Length: 222
Image 1: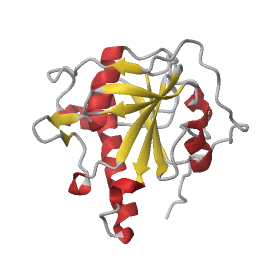
Image 2 (image 1 turned 90 degrees about the vertical axis):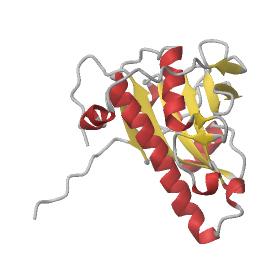
Image 3 (image 1 turned 120 degrees about the vertical axis):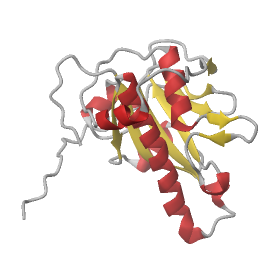
Image 4 (image 1 turned 90 degrees about the horizontal axis):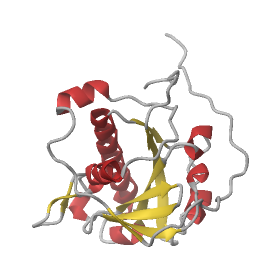
């Protein structure tokens, strides 16, 4: 039996939000996704991998719109159905886009970003040093008040499953679009909740970094 190989990181210093370089608009209207773009599903699955080295180049609006729609957008307007499953369609996971100019919540029905906090909080979305340099860190937040009709012993399980489905949607989109991404569970929940200006019933449970690949790639792949 071989010894288990563990990834190791040096924890970053105590992080604080950064004043954004530019004005953060109250809303960012997102382009509709091109449903004919990207690789076939099986090809995308063959290329899915975790990357930990990113370019700091900003994502284009069209890319951001397609990415968020793939994550948990509305794919059945008549019923409000989403691209990611949710038990009883509670849709308890909110997707937050942490960008250089602000923290935004993805409003899936309107397909737009809504400003939550005008700070650059990317460096607070995890302990790894790359999180503050990549153009986008997604944070998956459980809104516990949406789960009150669910048995308490099921809430953690089902919300974790929903967040995992969203993260995989993002991973497959990134593989299809030639982007780099990594899902991260090593986060300071209380610190991140404060940085995102969350309410008491909202809990960040998972983060995911997205960006273009660094010019020189030496990162590990899962």
